Image (cartoon, rainbow, N blue to C red; front, side, top):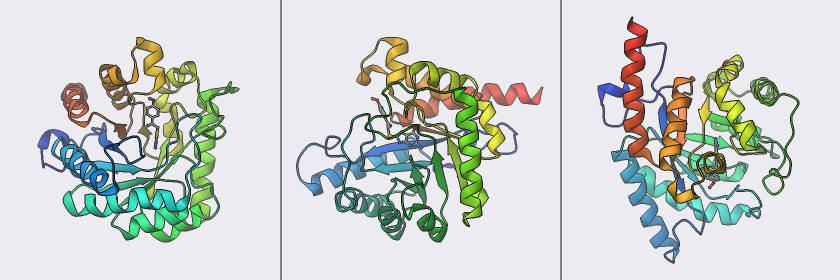
Amino acid sequence: LRPAPANGDPMLTVGTLAFDVPAVMGILNVTPDSFSDGGRFVGRDAAVRQAEAMARDGAHIIDVGGESTRPGAADVSEQEELDRVIPVIEAVVAAVDVPVSVDTSKPGVMRAAVGAGGAMINDVRALREEGALQAAVELQRPVCLMHMLGKPRTMQQRPEYGDVVADVRDFLAQRVGECVAAGLAEDSIIVDPGFGFGKTARHNVELLSNLRQLRATGRPILVGLSRKSTLGDLTGRDVEERMSASIAAAVIAGIKGAAIVRVHDVRDTVDALRVAAAIMERERVR
Ligand code: YH5
């Protein structure tokens, strides 16, 4: 999976190399707290402006999400999630040339999002909700399957593993197999270890350090560490001060073989990955 760079910049198309430049997925949150300046239209227009900025800054994918999956967050109804994400997806698809992904676990939202022009499904529950796998099979779009231990409300209450890297790898490999058996095209699947989803900071460090082991799934790897609390634990920084830590994590993920990094700060992450790619290209040529 190597989407063409939106701006045609040759620095990003190092596609003949075995070591791919990671694609950058820009995060577009449409939960009520994210565009808190009032009514739905204001929120929609602010979201489109942010999407346009991310596209200009070199995002390869824009990920639109309307369900907060932060630890302890309340469930969102399907209607509420539809009301949040579908107008934004329609408007973003019309405004930018970058493929739009929908961050959802609900089959009704997946269908409506693809109907609105969405190009990809990003599911933190790996299509385990009732009807989600069937919807994804029918929709025939790329799908990201993410590992999560437990459920968002309780997942950070003492998560435990035998061997976190092996457990996550085996879950993802098994889930890829189940989804392919159900009719999902194998070459449309991306896997994600789910940083912060039922993991301590130690688990997250162990997973990033051993990211290459996830290649045993045979599928491209997506990494989402941007602004997450593990980076706060490692730096002592509050969430709004974690950009440098997030960029370090994205570059390391790229070096360790991530195909896609999911980030808030697209411009600065693209810069950092371009520098890393130039060095990695030299190392490969030699
Ligand atoms: C992910 O890793 N994460 S939503 C807590 C934070 C900061 C950010 C302040 N959707 C992922 O971004 N989809 C989310 O601490 C995702 N992989 C994929 N595929 C959580 C999030 C966040 C949470």
